[in-house]
Amino acid sequence: MDRFYLYVAVPASIILVIQTIMTFLGMSGDIDVDFDGDGDVDIEGGSSVTLFSVRNLVAFFTFFGWSGLWMLESGFSPLIVAIISVLIGAIFVAISMGLFYLVSKLQRSGSLRIQNTIGLVGEVYIPIPPNREKSGKIMISVQGALMELEAYTDDIEILRSGTQVEVVGIIGTSKLLVTKHKI
Image (cartoon, rainbow, N blue to C red; front, side, top):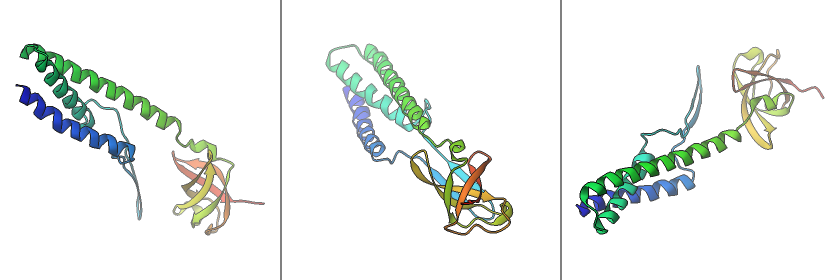
């Protein structure tokens, strides 16, 4: 019976260590893709807190395995070991979910508030066609960071790269409406 817990604990522990290292190196599986073509597709992914995730299953099996092995070595009966190991695994999954929930709240609180761009002046990075035909990109310093954001214009002429523009509005939830900056 102790081999069962050992066969569960060791691989789960190795995977947990790899996941932890990847998380600290910034390779936790977030996806952020932006495609431009005839259509416009934005795909964003992030770490959400869910009960059935690979991270939670690995945490469960790691602590289930090591606690079961430890309790068997301490002389507990197999039935008590199984019950308590499941409880300990569940407790550590709950702790893991709570920590990731707190971290995700910290990430969201530092995100860009697009409304803070209104009135700011930036520079066209990718030309912006007139009359909202297509979008372009601008470089703008907002909330202490230089950002590249998608922008449209109602101006009647193209805004070329290097042109100073002022943000006059927001389109949808994340696109800017700009006009040529008058000095």
